[in-house]
Image (cartoon, rainbow, N blue to C red):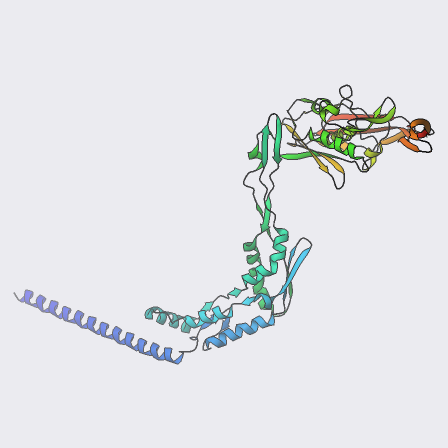
Length: 475
């Protein structure tokens, strides 16, 4: 019985001790809390309009300073770089603006607000913790920078317009064996403003650190804008890129000649040539006569330059021949003119011409690529130039065309004067023009995968051509 009683007394004593320790600890903690709270309230009142001690912004101790003083400090730092010039460039164009105009530098208002707000939230315990942390171990705030995005946009508007290119969607309409609407897709572009802002923001820390006016240059970054419809999506024929062009000038041509070559060129616009197909210029051109819409213009016939239906068509065959040469395609048939025609040497050396006379004299080539070839023509009425464009898929072939070599030069014969009873007496009219005779030779080599696949030699034997004048005999 005594042992049980002793145990009971000891247990009771332990419980009293625990209760005493608990209440003492609770009282001590409450006392400490009220003491800290009271101290913090006094501390808050002391720093009611100032930043708490131990707060640092960008390495600068701003503790004890008023919010307005902190803002003024960083505004003064901005004033040191106010005359800094920021030069934005795109190509050869540039726009220059000062740091002051861009409001570039420290975000003084934000930094002052951040420094002053530490320890002043609605959470008392959090405030006490932050103030103790700043007082004992410092709180370091990173710098915050700014520039006016609206002013930046206004400054760059001319350059942005210069750099902006709208993407072009592909067009491809194939009807009745001919392409009626065609356009390659093309990527657009615009200024990458987000990247530009990041690039500019990256420059500010060094500028404010140096604390003096400087000049910085930023190139406008460009990002690509893809079209909604790409060329590959628009067709399955492999018509996806320009593979060659051919050009010729027809300046000083008479109106009927221009009319005829325009009509003839339209016959080839949109024509597709299948892989492995042999293409005939004469077959695609069709009948040439007044019945098919052609007018009278000068042609070479029976050794004379005379008016005939379709004069000017050889401008088209010559231009097409040049495109075929540049494309590196096999040319199966080509014929030179009887004499050197001045039109074809307006923008070219001699020897790069091709005549046709339907149906006996033709210009033919073979499409030895694995994809279709699309022929497009274009007339530039201002420059008076005819263009041929060949589209398809490049297969890596390279073309080397030598400079034409002129040999066997022969002067033109003396002019020939012929009486013409239809012309009034005393009138002289030139109906043919003198041209030097010559032999012109050039070569073409086409290579693919390191191998020569075509080795051509083109020879043109031009006859000396006599000027012919008609003299009127009509009374």
